[in-house]
Image (cartoon, rainbow over all chains, first blue to last red; front, side, top):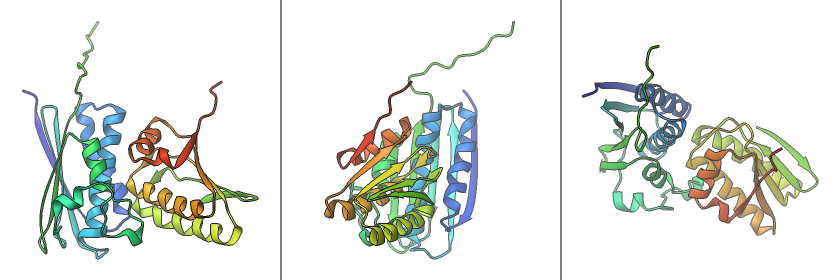
Length: 151
Length: 104
């Protein structure tokens, strides 16, 4: 079995940290030797989850967001956690085009993007306690790893 | 944000990354020009862009609503494969045209 590895970052819910968050996760992901497309998929999904925490979870107040990443063989798991206001109706929130903030011109596609780009998206949320989004993706699906031989 | 205005056509040169953080700035700049200059056509130029999340979709949708109401159109140019995928997935290809340049 290949190795496992884990990392955790905690940062403030400032919008300028969105770029930092997705790039950090992407950097951690590189150990699985992902394709550029897989990296882009994970970056987009992380960006969506972090943006949700900032806009909806904390409603632009500054608190901490925690990201935990794990690799286990070829499975990549990323969790984005906030201790914000939580989601009343998770199922409704996951419906494409659903948004509680149309005034901010949110497209209502955050969860749809996460689901499209990751294999699995699990949302645990309690009103007034916060939200945890766990996303999983198997890296290198349908692609045999090639190895180089020494001459 | 860089932009160019030719008569009633506004070209917006999108940044390298479009997320919630810089979407606000794009929105404000675009809206002030649209309001003051009678813009009817908007071209989103993705030449420098390699990352966009749903915040970018929100910006495009919002501009489309304004422009469409005035009988205008929106276009996307210089989209790479990733941007095409994002625009297609989000249904944006129903409201904008992707201008394909002939490859030499």
